[in-house]
Length: 361
Image (cartoon, rainbow, N blue to C red; front, side):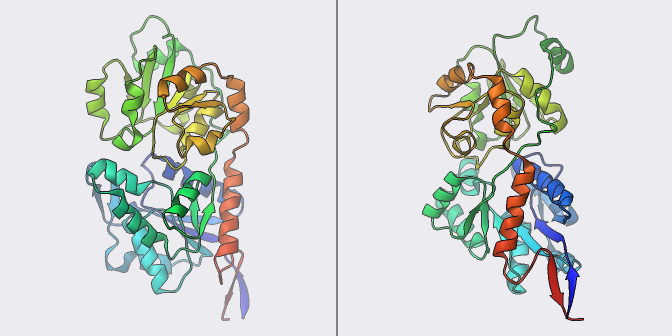
């Protein structure tokens, strides 16, 4: 027997670049921080296989790893652990590979998949939860981003749940000077003076984000939507006074966050909401509903306003100190998130060490 050092972690995800969403940003930042800690992270994603557009969401590719191609790819690596990040076709194939070969694995509960399917396709969420319980049932640890989500999943019969919080890139997301005049020039906005209030939403323009609750607010000021998705065209037609800027690179977001007076988060189904921390890190207070995600990020004393009446939340958030927002966000780093992730893999995957693996020699 001889010892050999393995510091490679395999992450299988149906969501990856060029998609822009919380799952992708979480995995990108996790990969970066793990690399700084000395680990090699291999992302197995849809573009490595034959793929096709997701029905009614064409910007998301779905992989079809036929002929055992995922297993063939995984068999090429010496790795310490396998983590399955999503419950789509690639996640299913990775799950089957691990079970067939008696390889322990962890999973993550990033997205309220049952609720999204119900909102988009009308299929009852109870069937989605049945599938999700089955999918995660063999996982050594199901990593969820918030205490309230863990409690909710436990009530629905999930087991082996562990808390894995998220962070914010404080080098990128910070208060950034950006004038109204520069904004108008950059985005061809024909307005003579700054609106009394700028309300901002950043995220997928899709039904599950409940964006209409934001756009229908009677609050004075300009509503700005950053992001793309299947609902963008219809919402633009119905709310012509709002400004839709489309998708935007992460590097451009700090200026918009910093320009806004309030970041409005109308979603009722997010498991966390990375954009909440991004906005706060740029000094922008948050207005949201008191639901999973905002409750976990802000708690009872965070620099935001949670109310069942979103207009009331916006009004309350407008008076919150921007400095308090920055100080609050500074306590949430991706390094801490990566260390928690490593700790769960080290303590819960039996028979596999992240540092050494016994081999016949």
